[in-house]
Length: 108
Image (cartoon, rainbow, N blue to C red; front, side, top):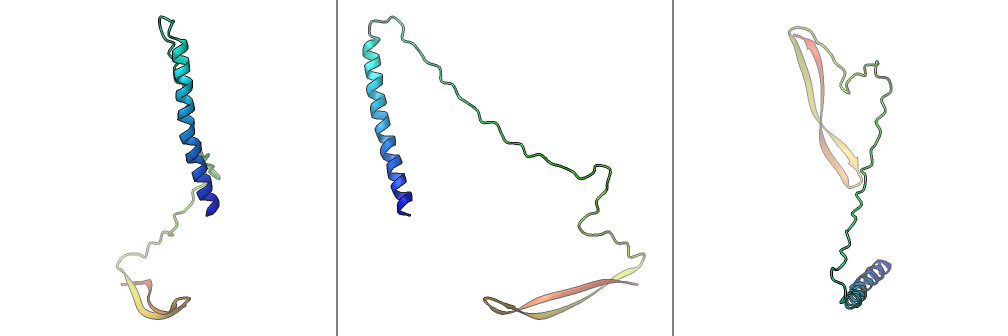
């Protein structure tokens, strides 16, 4: 933590000292250009950073991959039968009671 604070203070000190020397250099350059008719204007060149592209590779374009949840057709008049209970789970913070649900399809 001390290194971070020291680095930040050093950066602030360097940042505060730079405009003063730049102002002196500009005033000296302005005094040297008093005899010139038109002052020289410097254009500021701005460099744009290119965005990094992440390539996407697919395994095989002709191969169909199933969804995460497999497709299941239970048939006509099917009924979903569910059983809900509470179970104890032992966790580092202590034992807790959590709900559990088990479901399956049965013919209607």
